[in-house]
Amino acid sequence: MRNVLPLVVTFVVTAAIASVARADGVVYIEDGGLQGIATPSGFRYVVVEERDHSILERIGPSGRIVAVRVFPGRFTIAAVARDRATSGLSADRKTLVLVNTRYGLPRASTRFLILSLPGLFVRSAPTLMGDFSFDAISPDGSLLYFIQHTSRRDTTRYAVRAFDRASGTLLPGAIVDRTEPDEIMRGNPLSRVTSPDGRWAYTLYDGGGKTPFVHALDTVGRRARCIDLDALAGRQDLLSLRLRRGSVGAIFVVAQGKRILSIETRAFHVTGPSAASSASKTGLPWAPIGGAIAALVAGSLVSIFLVRRRRLATT
Image 1 (cartoon, rainbow, N blue to C red):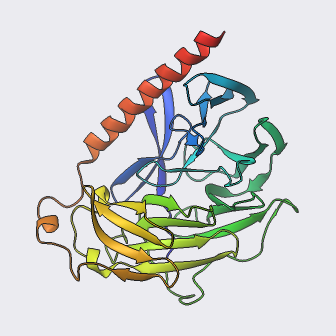
Image 2 (image 1 turned 180 degrees about the vertical axis):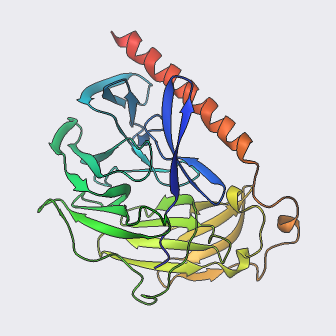
């Protein structure tokens, strides 16, 4: 399986500190607490971090805060790709996972909070020895998936691990593509979508200078497939590409709102142009990072203001 491990650094946004991941020039905010995570019914969970505690808020469709829970320590909702897609809410809407906020790489241990919904009660708070990042959750919340950082010096060395909630332990062995068990590729996570039932997590990676691909993780069967996207090789606009969910059994790679590739998710068959268009190959390699950071910072500051204003309005 072509797993991906971004190098994590710290980025300071005025009085707020947002954790970021960086590899090969790609920057995205790893902390998704202010971005939040939404339910189909319009409710949203967000996390506001204070000096020594974290505030989890459940916001209704009207924008009013309907429930609040305060936890000691710094925790957040995980952002899992450059497009700031967040993960940690199970498809049955009964489990939410928070991870302690990252300020550097590596860390000696990683703590998670596993909460029951809608009551926001902490059911368990496992601490894993070693450096982990949150990746995905099964539809019923019984299995969690983490990226385990396995080397202090080589940030490309890591493993995808499954965590069993019933036993409270990591399951043995890494999650790999069984059709290509010895193939390892680097890359940066660009975009994430999940299947309607929450079973499959699809992540678009840039390939780290090689062939871009989609990593498909089966959160129920504890298996993975890597789908090569040869038509994207050589594109200079990879950072702007996004995954979008289509009808049942299909996902799309989208560039500037236009569908450029279709992936049939039963047999993982790819259809679309045989090569990247010449227009997409022009210009500077990669997108300007400064503008991306500025946009993310501005969005985060606005989110802080709005969330805190709502909280004050309810007191």
